[in-house]
Structures are given as C-alpha cells and as structure tokens.
Image 1 (cartoon, rainbow, N blue to C red):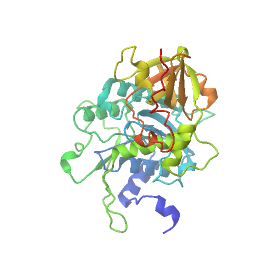
Image 2: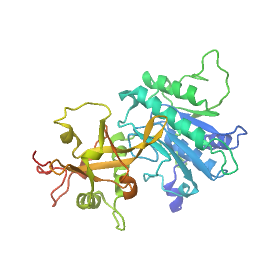
Image 3: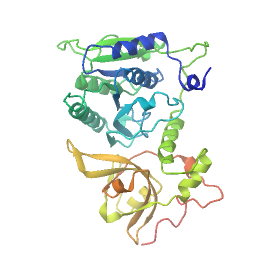
Image 4: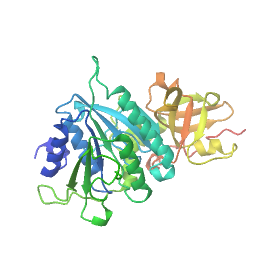
Amino acid sequence: MSETEKKLPFIPKEWSDAANSVSCSSLQPVVALVCGPKNSGKSTFSRHLVQVLLQRYKRVAYLDTDVGQPEFTAPGFLSLTVVDKSIIDSDWTVPCVKTPERCFFYGDVSSKRDPKAYLRYIYTLFDYYQLYFCKSSENKTELPLVINTPGWVKGIGYDLLVDILRYVSPSHVVKINISAYSKNLPAGFFWLDGNDDETAHLIEIQSAYQDRFNRSVLILKDARLLRDMRIIAYFRQCIKGKEVNTIKELTHELASHIPYEVPISSLTISHLHCQFSSSEVFYSLNASIVGLGISSDVFEDLPSCVGLGIVRGIDTERGVLYVITPVPENVVEKIDLLLQGNIQLPTCLLDVKDYRSPYLSPNVLASS
C-alpha cells in the first residue's frame, strides 16, 4: 500500500456512485447537503464529495454547520470556505485548517446553546455564497456547494436540520443511514410538507462499516480529543519557521511566543452565552479562547470573525490584553470585537513543564 493510500479512508462503491451522481448532475449550481445521525460518516463523505467535485471544478465551496466537529476551522465556528485542488492529496488523518471566505464565531460546540443565532449565522453564510459564488458572470463561474451538517438529528436538532433544508433548498440531499434504524432520519423527503414540490435529488446510502480488509471503519470518536486536535492545529499556525512536531514542543513555543498588545479601550467585549459582572470580566477572559471580530466588516448586520485568539494575560493598570493569534498583524490592527464563548483551551496547552506557564501565573492580572 502506498503512502498516499494510507492517508485516504476506504470509500465504498455506493459512496463513490453517490458522489459521482452529484458531480455529474445537470442541475446548476450543485448544492449538496449531507445529513445523517452521529458517527455515520458525514464528514468523510463530504470530504470525498469535495474531492470528486474538484475533478470537474477548479474550486468548491464548503458550508460547515457542525460547530462541534468542523472540517476546515477550529470548533465553535460556522464557516463558508472555498477549497481548491491543493487538498486532494492531503492527509485525512491530520486536521486541515483553512482560512474561510466568511465565518462567524458561534462560541459553543452544540447548536442547542442558541438555536436562533445558529440558524441566523447559517442563513447569512448561505446568502453570502449565493451573492458572491453562485451567480455566473464574465469574471467568475458558479461554484458547487457542499453542506455538512451535525449528527444531532432528533428533537431540536431535527427541527434545525429541517429549517436549514427548507431555507437552502439544495439540488441534492445525501442521507446516510446506519444499522440502528431508530437513530436514522425519516425516510424520503422528510423536510417537505404537503404543499412543497420535490425538487431535490435525494440519495440514500449506508454508512461504511467495513474497509477492503474487512476491518470496521465505524469507529466511535472521542469528540473532545478531536476538538482539542483542531484547536491545537489552529494555534500551531502561530509558530513560523520552526519544526513543531509534538504537543510538548507546541506548548513551550506558545508559552514563549510574543503576544500582541491590544488596548482594552479599543475593544467591545461580548459574552455570547453567559453574562459576567463588570468586576469579573477580566478574570473570565484570562487564559480563554476568544473570537476576533471586525465591526466595520458587516454582511447582513453581522460583523465578520477573522480568527481565534488566546488571551494570555491582562494588565489592567496599562489597560492592555496580551493575545496570541495566527491572524496577521495587519488584520489584528482592525480588530475591535472580542467574542467570548464556551470553547475551552486544551489542558495540554496549560501544562508547561520546566517553565512558568503564563496562563497559570498568579500575577497575570495586575492589581487595581
């Protein structure tokens, strides 16, 4: 087996046929939504579908609605990313971090925290796609869109999925079923009511249970570990010009990394899912992951989020925050929104052996 084959998961013929059916469709633009219960292979199929579409198109748009297990961003984001053929030979076992065309920091790993905000962000991202990537002109062509969805398909999760399907009205819906029938979505065009026309092409496939060597590929995921891996992959981008191969090396590099000084007076601090008293705001921010927003970059009344930062420390006497982020300096200068959610800093990044961790120091906050 070649090194390239080792990096790619086994794709059953049924999956290949489904992806080829979407790619060769005469419906334009192709908007394919992938749905199914947890651990059914939605992300794997979506990634495979992107690669198949890239054999026909130069670029493909990807709308990620899974805030807990996103494909190209850190957890907590809802994003629209445009990918090209450079991802075709990438290692599927390593998190692939891309800079989105547009993203919003939802600030949690589950849509149940704030369903209304969750839907608004998704609708806005789809509108952005339609405006900038869906209309043909002399200078651009329509891009196909792949929409990956969460595995929460019962209760409120089911209602959210139905709302997304009705708003997007995709050309193709790929529904993945697992052997536990009770956990699957309803059969047929479940999102339509009696007055709607069946305009979408529905494709139902089975989850991939075995590979070519008869080994199970339906592996229960450690969701927290996968989230931590994506956060680590994101902040690894801070380290330039050095080989960082282990978590220990990254921990030391981040701990010694020179942070940006951001004046507190230039920021509006927004707590997305909880409130703090004014005396506790800085304590809540210290050693936290925050979304970095620009209030002047607005689409449909929603400011853009340009990335994540770690609040390494706060000096209240000088009135500055010390922030570590891979976001370029020329973009950091425009940041005036700090969005605090519930995305936790991996504990492995707090434990800096033989080095005084800046996050755990009792003197991070200057006395007032």
